[in-house]
Length: 432
Image (cartoon, rainbow, N blue to C red; front, side):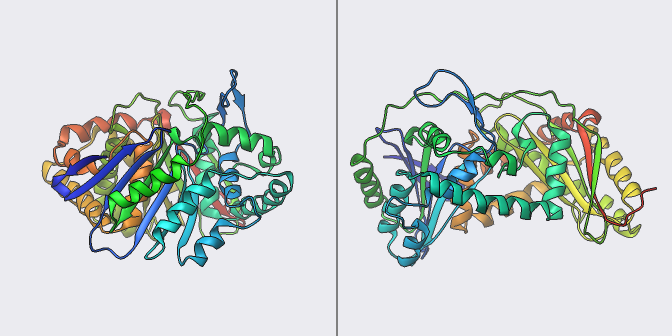
């Protein structure tokens, strides 16, 4: 078991890769009552074209199948639901599917060893039948239809459709009603056998734990199971240029005032270790300093009554491409979006003083250090960035050593060709 010290943040990770390929990372947090465990696979909604395990040709599977599979793994062979078994142990359980990963998790104060055994067992023993696949299809259909009635979801999905032509960021993680109708138990098993091999998975346990004891428990569990030979996973992604598909589109919904999202499509790049994480952090420093509550631009929008409420932003990068998103509500959408777009395009030549840079860098660092007191944040963030070829515990030292020059390199992402806008108007809205 390898011990990795992060002296600057007083953290330690114990790491081991088992013979079957499973990567285990244990993060001891003495004095904490709760333990948090995440068991994840490097497989999310972005992967829908790949070579199935044991085959030689690429196959395209329905959109939303990773999310569908996540739902169905809780159904155990004897008809019980794994979530109910966790509850009986006094443990909280959950799961989620994102663009790059699917993660199964639990937390609690007692029965941690039993919980770990159950977590490993139900994820590693799928039971898909024609009947339970069909019943789940109806549940997910209702879920997807519900999202269509949510303005914030439609705002985000509309922006992604404007940005991407074929890259799966264009689609909701859950897929579409039409696509999930194509899912069968056979396609679920193909995806499971390809992406749920231990060599494509990580298990992270955080809390006041005896690392030797937990590691031995995991090893004993895995040694009792047989897994096929690990094979390299071949995935196919259609690379796009940075030009957006549409510069503008809109819909009308039952909202009181227009909701606007403006975004930049980030280009496809080959990232080195830790680069996706650091680009995200640098962009967040820029956006917080220029659009955050303390910025002159945000105050101007408030003073001129161009926005109602806050001005939100987010940055997403997988290990290939991503997006910047700025969203807000406005009673004067045309005027407000014009000013926001003009301002964002000016960020090509980033004007940030050294004092401003150091101030917002410290704010980001402070936010992260605060997060290290939250076990869920540690486990979920660590596994997310691990699958992005990034070590989140290294971000502190990397950010501390970063310079204004690193920030100014980010100006290349604020290009007119990469800019798009999506608006959700009230049903009775009359455009100028």
